[in-house]
Length: 177
Image 1: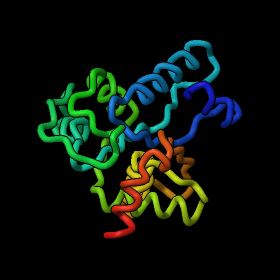
Image 2: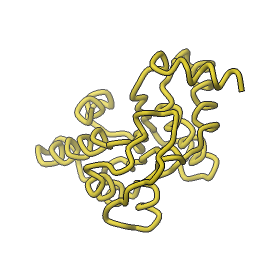
Image 3: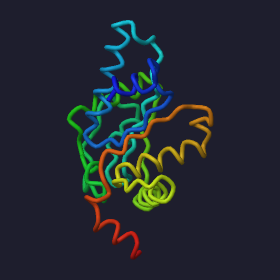
């Protein structure tokens, strides 16, 4: 994913990457790719701010980030409709956190209502039936823009890591409620 971003940005990198973070291996892999691109002199030292998006019902990375901890603790009673975010203790938590800290990024959690509302926004505005994980990412972007932590001129990449078709029951519940 890191190499594909570099290619899509024509030899540059975006300002911000928002990655729905359960296990977080995509975030870890992108950071490694950016290090490799720098080692090959394809990019400079500037890296995107890495933002880990989590669900409030399972946010071990957010809790560790808020405490400036080097690793997370197991999240008890994990609960979120976003199955890909329901990871109580990511195996590579120390790598995720190190990458976030090194990039000047953040870890942010949103609640179920926010992530499902963001999924509806993606469907309505972009024609994308996103997974709740992607909805969490968009909800995080919306929050950070509202707080002025993502500026209007910055390039932002959001990874939608799944399809809403895998979550038809969640959509039915969201539309009924």
